[in-house]
Length: 173
Ligand SMILES: [Zn+2]
Picture 1 (cartoon, rainbow, N blue to C red):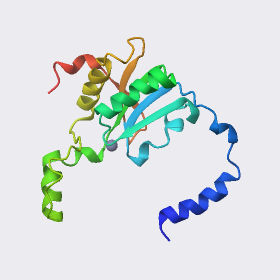
Picture 2: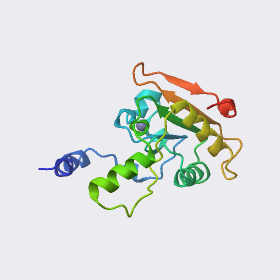
Picture 3: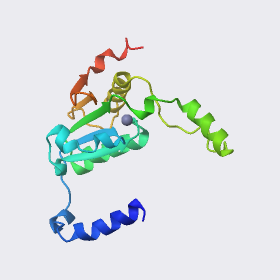
């Protein structure tokens, strides 16, 4: 039995205690962009916010792609979130390779290079990644100036968030 088959079985049990009010329109208060890393899944505990308040946007890295910007526009303009938190972390899998390395490796191992160059948004420094994200989100004309955009690096060893100062953009390597 696969994990998905197990999940389907568990879902039938879950549905018996599911709150039907969940069918109502959600009203999240904050948008959090974070990595697909499973260690960042427990945001309500990490951030001390209820599930219902957090609009979670996840990508590898995380990468603030054009799609993510679109989601942030919808989150703030349609769903009504009032703050944006960019949540990076130490020990990210996306720092362990470069886009060109992975493209070369997969082209070789599969014998098919037609998807290359694929964008994986690999990066090296989470602080620099965060600074670039803040700049990208902050400069988007459809994300209201009244919405705070703050970036952080979550330390996997200590569990603490460290705020990244966007102003260091010009001097960072
Ligand atoms: Zn990651």
